[in-house]
Image (cartoon, rainbow, N blue to C red):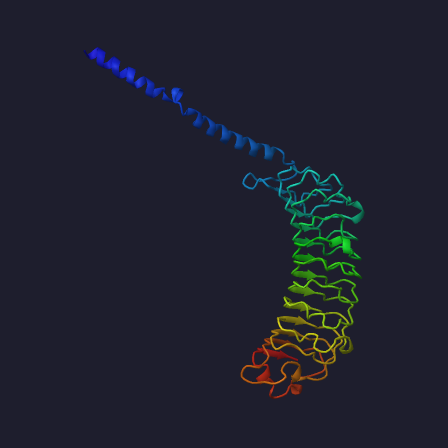
Length: 350
């Protein structure tokens, strides 16, 4: 009797211990294991495809870090890479074939290299149909490269040697919101900015411009044109720029004759920098302006009417910062009743 019971128990337990071999749902577990193995193989393959001179972190496999490696040429780029860091190298050329496999790129960092316009292929950027951010600052470019992706949102080409911007260079860039072209040698921009319908930040300071570019984008929010040779402004050039809040025109050659009446008397402006010019009078500004920089001009008179036409409880200037130092006026030239108009100003520097 005892022998039969033990035999029965062993027979009953045996299928349980081998259940995984005969389980009709075992294919599910096998499939999951294979899936994990496949994902692991893909990650391993991505890492192995990374050039030896670069880093491709397993935790961020779509990024490739090749910055500061002393590279003189662009390494091979796996097609799955979205973020490519090549800055701070000595790369001298970007041939048509350099980026042909990098079709997934969203960010491309090429700043602080030794690129020249002649060494960038006409088709070098042609395959980058998803690129949003391109950094080419601090190179030796004399022109904007051809066939830049129209998907760009952020384009930085400051600190180069660019002399002219043509309409075709930026045409079709409907999504571009930030454009840095400062510290170049640009003398003319024509109507190249007209098509940039989404542009919010434009920096064209430290160039050789003698006039304000035609057809500024209506959505621009920040406009930097300081350190140029601009001596006059077009009539009502700020009127159509309803989103504009920050304007810098310092270090130009503006005179009273070159600034039409009420040019800066537009609502919406928060900051206006006209320092280091040749102005002899304080221009009329909107009461909504908060920061006004007029230092180092040739202003001889403090005209309260430039800030307030009349003053009462609700009508007064919102100026918080007013700099007039480096002109030909002193504290004794400021009218006694200016405190009513300029009640928000923390201090007036003369």
